[in-house]
Length: 96
Image 1 (cartoon, rainbow, N blue to C red):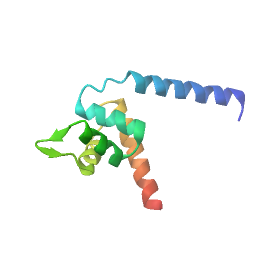
Image 2: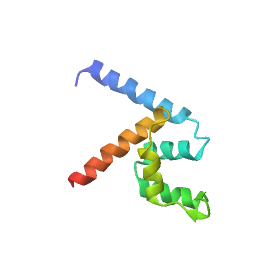
Image 3: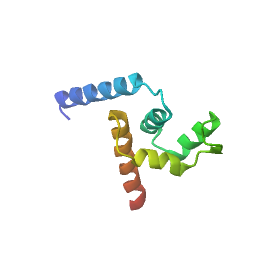
Image 4: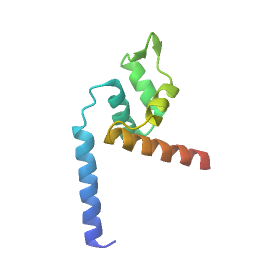
């Protein structure tokens, strides 16, 4: 790898970190998107949100609730990134 290529990768990673750090997860949906970008694991996110007391009606969240949100039409850049990662991870698990 050439130095300039490494420098470009560093710039991209720094931009990614800044976007994630500055993302306002002020709604349940936005929190799901940010958590998925950080964890890339629907089961862990579901467990974490249930432990925080999040509910749909009176019931606890299930992984399908999170997956459905991730599959929905992107509403912002974080959602778009989360959806892209979700689809990539889904493809990887099929190939195993």
